[in-house]
Every structure is written in C-alpha cells, then in structure tokens.
Image (cartoon, rainbow, N blue to C red):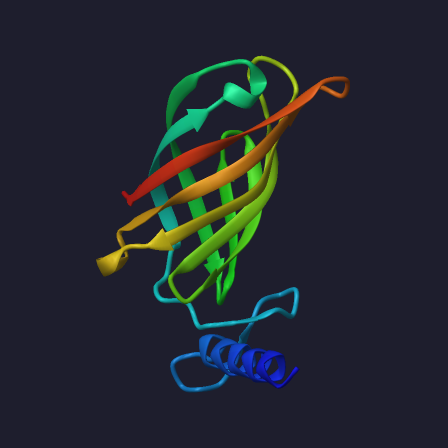
Length: 151
C-alpha cells in the first residue's frame, strides 16, 4: 500500500511540474484544463502530408496532402481543414485536436484523437491520429500518420 501511495504522489508531482507554464504558473484552456504554456504560436497555414491506414475499413494504405489553417488563442486552437473545423489545444510542445469532416466518398470521418509533437524551431508537427468513418449504418476505424510543415 505504501508503494502505491508513493507512486501516486510521484505521479502527482510530475504532473504538477508538467502542468506549469514557463513562469511557474499554470495555464488553462477554454475548457478549464490545466496544461503547460504553448511552446510556440501555431497560427497560420500548414502543409499536411498524411499516410492513412484504412485496413480496418477493408482498404490499404493511402496518402493525402492538403493545407490546414490554425488560429490560436493562448492554449486553445481552431483548425480548419478538409471542410471541417476542429477544436484543440497546445500544451507545451504537444498538440491535440478532435472534430469531423465529410468524406468525399460519402459518410463522415470523426477524428477521435490526434496528437502531434512540435519540432525544434516550431516549423514542423508530427504524430498520429485515430479516426472513425461512418455513414449512419456502417462504421470502421483506422489511423493516420501526419506530418505538417509551416508554410
């Protein structure tokens, strides 16, 4: 029992250190979540290159390239891409967002979790997304590797 309490205390201390901004004060998102101050400003246009694993939907690997536009207010992000608007956050160098967009072949794609890491210099983001496609009757899921470069 003592080890478990010590482990929980260590995790709480580590979490508190992670959740502080550069000046030691916590930063908060519009939803009230506490996270580290943004490592950089992401506002602007980003070139997005995706490698999409559609094997869970009976497909293979496909590729997509498009431009995403990011607006940032503190830790909060609004991302416009592929006909959808996504809400997210930047906590330190970690970027997350969720949302949905219409699939050109029918149905809707819901990005359930997208986590990107900001590269050194603040001009690249890379990471992975999980998504679910649905047409209201059928559904399937997959993952996407995303690499973004600031334009």
